[in-house]
Length: 379
Image (tube, rainbow, N blue to C red; front, side, top):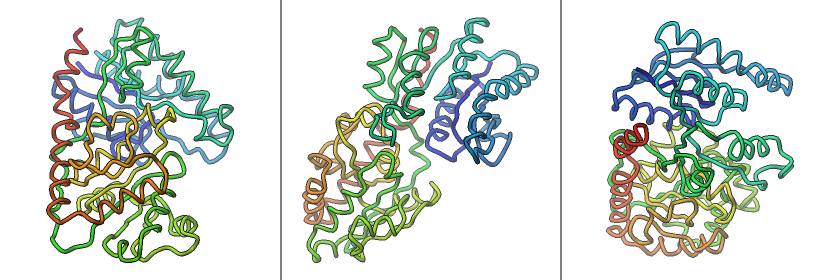
């Protein structure tokens, strides 16, 4: 009895999607299933990770032709590995898919109907035109729209990462549950804040795609020199040259840009930090449909959020308890919140950090969702 997971993620742990896959794998294991994963890991073609047998379909996309041929051949390559798995383990009990190519979704649906296998789609995002140069004419935008409006239909059941996606798929008549970002609280070890130290801020992500990092940096630059001196602001995922552009080449010494680093490095810095910054436009579809993984990673590390409320963050974040809520997504709004933080005492920051960790333990540990998934599978 096993669950076959088919995703485009760099399993086992090379991107946020792969991390989510691994925790769903743990839930399935707790429910008595073995787990086999077919993904897009960059470095290992097959192996075992946390008792999950995994295979990779990854091929380099150096040119447009590579992307085209790899996409066309996806189903054939998927079938080849699937038949090898079936020869060794028999038919799967459940098929769990993520955002795979359309040919893979159609193939999995037909297989599920033919063999009477339950099929589940883990839905985690829905793009907005503003994310792409060609706006609505962008091919990725078109594909995601088609997936969420056309391809995900019966007999597929849906796990939605946000209320927005939950309501969308329930509106299509599909059996749907909501499970936010999930992690293992035991894997994160927050460090105790030391009295008298500077307030450590951190940003980690891909600002060009989703986040308003520019506004966060400009908000920091707007503070008085004496206020900035109370902080250290570490930025991951953006180069020093980009940050310099945001500051008109007058970057304060308190801002340190690290460029692209490993997830392990980010986690290490979060564990040592006090606040994580995040701004996104509240009315854009991508901000409503997704759920920022970085916010949960921060909370797990006892790192309070300084952010505006997008997606379902308002369900979990309380201003002055586990976060400082920004009223909007402008530099001025963030600046106001940073000034508030600059006035906080050691004890007040320590309490925010303690409550941030408690929030993560009570809402985002994967173990909390085992019974919910069990009921979802059995209904």
